[in-house]
Image (cartoon, rainbow, N blue to C red; front, side, top):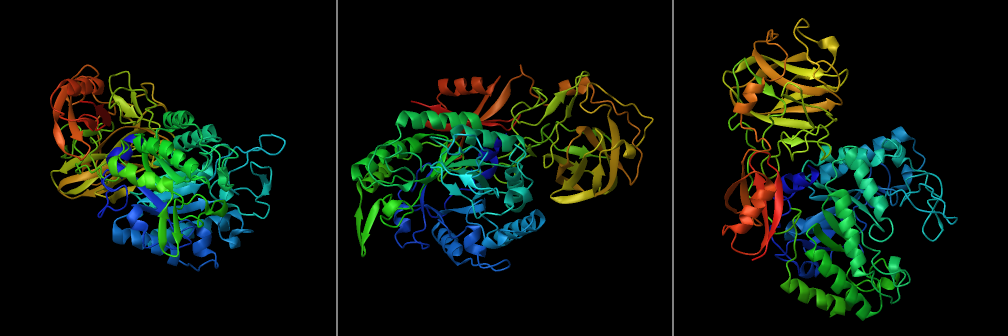
Length: 637
């Protein structure tokens, strides 16, 4: 579901330049760079269409002068230039164990958490429409000390004890921050990272939330994959994985800014690494801090030719940010990762830049992540699962599993689930990732409801007025709420048998996760007409079978609790495994090419390939009308 979300919710409409610029103008992904010495050079837009502030947006830079004081000037400069020129802007970074304000040292966990909240809120107020955010930076746990003992150390200073870097040198000796503890600790589950992502999503609903780290291609690859898997399982709303890519030279060949000549990390190994990362995370990838530190022009050019070309053609890479471009003014030794030389205003391209200009003029690259310049899909509203809105007349029920079919574009998703796996293993609504469990009587319930999950339903209220909303649930604990078109209706409902109504009615076990089902309720006021109803999991865990509206405040619901009857299932618009479904065919620019009927997505793809519907080679998408799931396919003519 998280990958589906990246296609249909976040950035098919959210990462479109208003005024494309730079060498990657019109390409399938951006090629960007960073500020130079805290400034945005006047020639930036000549080369790049994405910008990251190297240091100016970091917490220490903005609030290093003291708690309650903010210096936004450097970050504003990059952000405003991006706005003015239509470049993509990435905020770097919200949480990092390095370059945080010194006054944070010594605060206890509670005070540190308050400071973090103030920081997040200040950034959200200043930049409410951020497109991309490095939420957490360099938190992989897995360095080794000089004796080779595994120490559970972090890539930056998230602990108060001294740590050792890869050269065995003590780092973090002066760090006494409690960032990790304030955000919930680690507990072997990276809980502090999960919390940071949830805090970010609360403030930026549509931003692309990125986890960013170094040495993730050569050395810390498996540790990075494990981190992403862990926080996804914890429910972190992480949308992409940033690979800094400073590690693409062999040790002794300029890696980590040491300079010199050397040679590139073998291309086949780079390919295998990114394939392993994609297979393990299923997250769109950003090459976030690429550089080749070398005084040898040929060596640097060869690395660019191999690696940048591969990143451009890798369909899972959404964008590339080169970490500095002016020789002598980058973070590496002597600034030797720069690819242009500026001699008092006289610009000379190093061979890597000469090649890059030529390559990007003739290659647009491949990208199926949806997070890319040039891919626009016309927004499509979510649709009622049964073809028409649920009619609210004072009788009848809404089965929880019959949530809307997702649309395309921000605001048109119809559900949010904390992870992609359907833990209930039902084939009903297969592909959505919502945790649906089949019941013995032929019905279904939604279980494993994690905090922050939600489901939406299109309803039509026939008559405005007071209603009693009943929900059939199981579980001892948990809370749920309902909203209409974004505004809460009724009170938050506690899922507890203490609040059970009509206890004399039938209760069903049916192999439920938490035992028998019972009803809970709240009074709501409904306006007439068509609306989007949302059920939100305020506190996990409970099962949900259905809910319904009875006319009148505190009106009784005398219908039995038993789940939906099997007969009604057969008559509804529900795609069974052996029932043909309809698939829309969409090109990379969002134009609909037609529709096909098929028994499965794979059959739909084969039908499209065998037909004349698609006239030219390229990347296309199919969208299931039943589930809303989007899948890419490659056509070669």
